[in-house]
Image 1: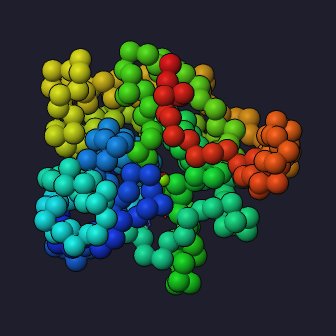
Image 2 (image 1 turned 90 degrees about the vertical axis):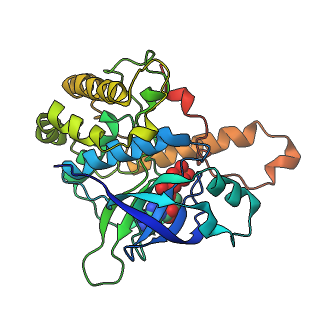
Length: 307
Ligand SMILES: Nc1ncnc2c1ncn2[C@@H]1O[C@H](COP(=O)(O)OP(=O)(O)OP(=O)(O)O)[C@@H](O)[C@H]1O
Ligand SMILES: [Mg+2]
């Protein structure tokens, strides 16, 4: 069951993580912990932090592996030594409460290369895809998995960990435009070719997503990230909107449950076809330039997933 997020104070800004679009920072805190901090001043804004808390704590409550989240008091003065102006601008725009995730030391991103010889249990794959479908998380694809493999030191078998739910809950960008039973396209999900048993996951997990649980996870979002939301008078009204939406959505799982996943071979064929089409459309001089071999470019505009 969800609890109350711990609060810590950042004492040292270690380094920006440029692999992340929102430029999270590695930060040490007064509890001697090390955290990956997502900042309220990032272009993704505080809604990304709201989604991180709600979806991440839901994942944890459902038994999926997800690093601890903490609320981080951050004073930009601790990062005065940061040499890059754009990073300093981000930090200066983020005084006060930000969101920290326990830093998994030595963890590896679950890239297609890592995935190639990593076994995933079909039921675990099904549970993760089910959570992503429930929470409209369209950012867990083959090339942007937002999954990590940890530990990697050989002290225990490496397992999959969920990270980065900032792009989930896409409906909160336009509350009135998206029906709770809407189906999203999960054919390119990072775990699609592990024979995910989404039906078993639905039978197991849907009854556990009660209004009580939804109220508990939304209660963990700080008021500061919910105030001033257009169309809502108070933070609690916004929390209620998340509860109502997800409660309606979980009951409509028959309408959105993803069950159709291309095999590895089908995906490879699709990618090859896309690459060939790109190549054909190119002028001769450009044909010599290597392309992404059909890899979809990183998605930048989430509005395509709205209503
Ligand atoms: N808890 C963690 N422990 C170790 N490394 C992490 C952790 N969280 C994130 N990272 C590393 O930082 C990278 C970026 O993190 P994350 O995906 O959360 O950022 P983001 O800005 O939301 O990214 P994007 O929106 O581009 O996907 C990850 O791919 C991973 O390599
Ligand atoms: Mg990410």
